[in-house]
Length: 487
Ligand code: HEM
Image 1: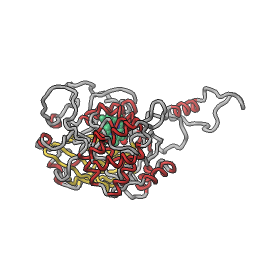
Image 2: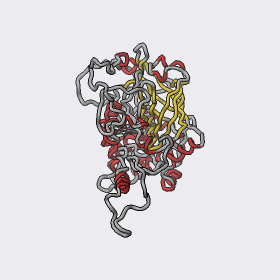
Image 3: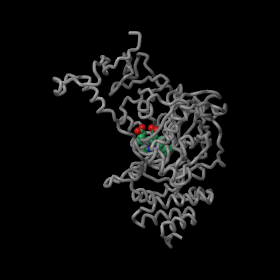
Image 4: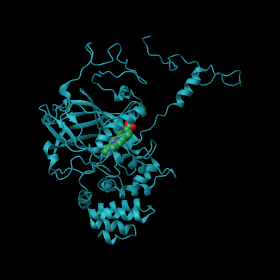
């Protein structure tokens, strides 16, 4: 058949005779089980929902490209897609809220996910960041507990500030991130008006084997704009899909959003002496110490043809690095390298890397076989073991990771620094008087419903330690006083 048929068919391609009336026994009789089209239609519909992402369920996505604008970047990394000025790589990006369910409102106070997939010639590179340069916690072992507090109370099925503030007040490393969150950047005006950050420190390695630590900053070319909380609250009711709609419309109208990527490059040895632990994701690295260097531009210029196919089925994995880009010992990053592909094997299936949006544009050659939904020919008649004498694919030692020296005993230990206050305090002091007032109002509104004063006072102590003025103002807003022992 050369011409494309326009006849409705079953999943097996068989023409359907009637799509309006099911087959019944007699004019008013019961439906016959032989109406296979009806059975298949209902059965397929019954299975339409897949598990939503356990976090970052609500999101919007688009395709685009990344173009290198600086010829100097190959000094720091041998990653092929960054090798020369003008080099373009196709991309897919997905932006999301964190805590809400698939149908939740876009304009809530929450970090925004900033997940990027670069379809490079050396395989897919995924950079799965947020619109904040830091995070709430710094060890993966706390992530499930933290997320439980952001979701619903198991008894009431309601969001619960008691859980949120109990956890945060007992986890002072969260102070820096919650300050970002309750400030003007806590609700972006649109997904186009926010920056993206890699957040963790990553490792880059050049073709001489020299290693560097790197921090990624995607700066919005549209500018950074927050949304007034009253507007956000109203929109949450009137148009829960406001951000998704804005991104879709901008791209449909050829108003392509773009971001300029800058990196901070940190000499390898500095991790031993820098004033902050480079691998502690609750801390930023000063741009005075390590200025930003421009790398290139990311442009989003194509909406997916089908939201489920591309946005819902997208699978980003912090473990997907390409040669020249590597993990750091950050304890959060290490946990994430396990968690994403693990949840995706559950959410989408073991062969989810074959779904078009996730499929590598570089050849995939390995000895993985079988499993549900294997749709790529399954390696055909090629050998399914290695080593073999049949000319099957072999490892390439040139792509081995660079070594990282370490010593010590295996133990459960915290990061050395317990200073959770200097950086949030600096952020507070940087704010204008108006922004400070809005920050305090946002905190007070969020903390007011907490039932136990004990929790509020514990949190006030953290604000006070970061800046006494901050602690005093929140205490006053809540009708409490900073405890004498804290002053
Ligand atoms: C999504 C786990 C920390 C950014 C997810 C998902 C899981 C997860 C299981 C769902 C993935 C899927 O279903 O495809 C974790 C764990 C963390 C952690 C265990 C800490 C140990 C972070 C941090 C960031 C981040 C620090 C940002 C810097 C994201 C983003 C998504 C996501 C952007 C959505 C990806 C998408 O659009 O599909 N996370 N996460 N997460 N996470 Fe994390």
